[in-house]
Amino acid sequence: QVQLAESGGGSVHAGGSLRLSCIVSGSSIAPYSMAWFRQTPEQEREGVAVIENAGATDYADSVKGRSTISRDNLQNTLYLQMNNLKPEDTAMYYCAARRWAVQRANVFQRGVYSDWGQGTQVTVSS
Image (tube, rainbow, N blue to C red; front, side, top):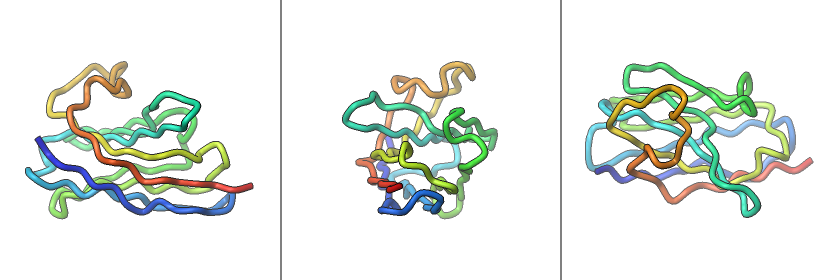
């Protein structure tokens, strides 16, 4: 089990950029596959981006081409660089971790992740 702490959220205008960070403690991040999810009061938590322990990445269509997920195993940190932000990106963003491999079709299923952070708020104004 690991502890996750997100940071980097904030308020920006449409077209702006943010870089979210997720510091992992309690264990080395290296064997974990990591993901970013987001949630609004009106919508269920949805997967945004995932990076497997070997480095493969996948993105939700809503952020593809505008966001980059990365990890620094030495710093035990996960990142999400978001560019050209849109008002519909407004949400609470959470990082999540899992130790086991899953089929690609399931990488954005909430239930396959065992550890979650408390979230960081991103607000994009038009």
